[in-house]
Image (cartoon, rainbow, N blue to C red; front, top):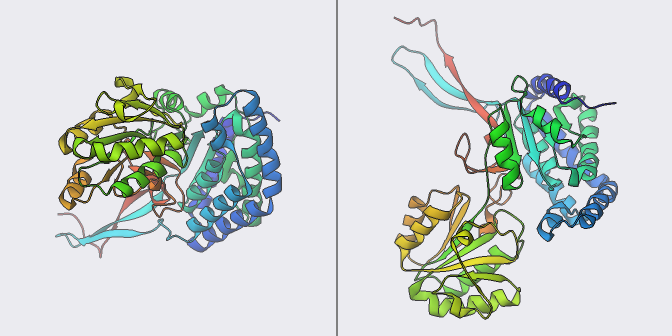
Length: 416
């Protein structure tokens, strides 16, 4: 049977009305059953994922993309645990805030409500299939999941876990649509269905996100890339800064919260950079260094302006020595992508200035950029990271998939 995205979107809009009416207990029971179903079907999911990984290797997929694509028993367990974490969180839907009495006598407040139907368009990350479905359901939304062809077998296998749980709870299966057709035309049509879909969240490479942003008739959450900086300020604890650099750059290179640029204040460069060079050499990192830092590295390339803009997503990093705090901020303001910035410092005043003056979605003091993740920041999981400020900024959890309506309570007041 041929898949029709317009019909699927119409069905999702209808299902969204059912999901929006579910109680917190009903949603949490559904999510816990999705987690249980995932674990029970681990073997089938891994077999499907093996097909995608094998195809990716045949097609010459790079190491970062392969890492994002690959599932293991441990990763499936982590995905299931994230779903359980989401189930354990407070329900954002129905929360009432800002109640105040007006001079007229009426009481005015705001109540959180679902957005409706969310469309996710993503590449190579099968975990997004579950994370996005769980967060959307928690927030009372339906979701349409359009993954890339490179993960199609994995995504469809994961969808079975969701279908089983929806069926068990007598919830319309159209509440979670995993698009089985990876043809580009399906995505193009999806982006026109503003009568059914309330928000589009693209997650993947910069090319995909720009295409979606430029072609969608539906509001889009944007996150073009993650050029994350570590700034080693003059008072930094050297070992602490080294640990932040090693974890942020080398733990997983193909993720958007990995470090891409190292800024080192000149007063600490002679002490810090030789140690950083030795550590990065151990990891066989490719270094793009400025003229003031290149001499500290045995085999570095001279950096040019393109390196300060680069999201390498590889064992590769740009290094620059800066004169002072102001120069570091100027660099980040010019080249940052609004994702995550880290300062290593023992100067409380500088730390506070960094937090106030850096305008990125996540700003950290003496903590690894790898914590810039919905799960690590207490969201259970994330549906994406917004660097566009409207209507969310930073990692997006269930609350970011709701909006607010005004509620007014009176005792027969009329306007004079």
